[in-house]
Length: 190
Image (cartoon, rainbow, N blue to C red; front, top):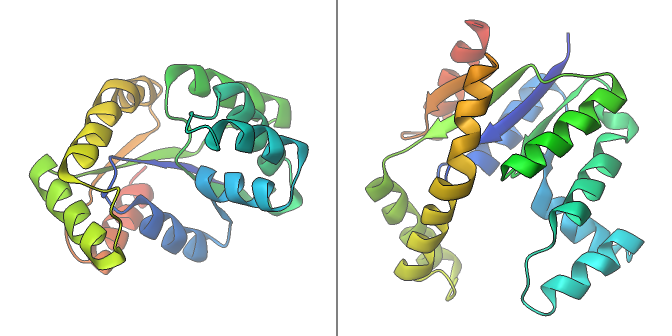
């Protein structure tokens, strides 16, 4: 049985933590677009150099470059039995690109896990994380802006995956182990 999952949710909902835990339980790699970017930039790949040409100017990496990096990563051997994809897709164009990547590989998604959380809870979590990690760029304004961008660009994807019958919504608030258990129960009920 394969485990090809997306994990989505607003910043601060615990996606990275839950993706890593689910990947361990499913014995598949957790793949974060941030990690893909860093690995390509550090490895000085052609895609990494291209991505860095944008990030060094403070610009967003274009979808075409992100899509190519994801295509490359999903084509690696360790994804044959599945993956947990975190941080991608972020918009409708990336959904279309991912559909194409998966079709080319002869695969389909098994589920799209969405961690839900109250906005006030997220603002509190992210503010605490900024303090603990000394992230000066995580001001209340920038955090609120990122949540707004999620609502505008990424949240609509949830409806698209719901229409495909792939959506699994899980309350992302609570202890890490409790959220992980909710994910397992929700996936088992599919």
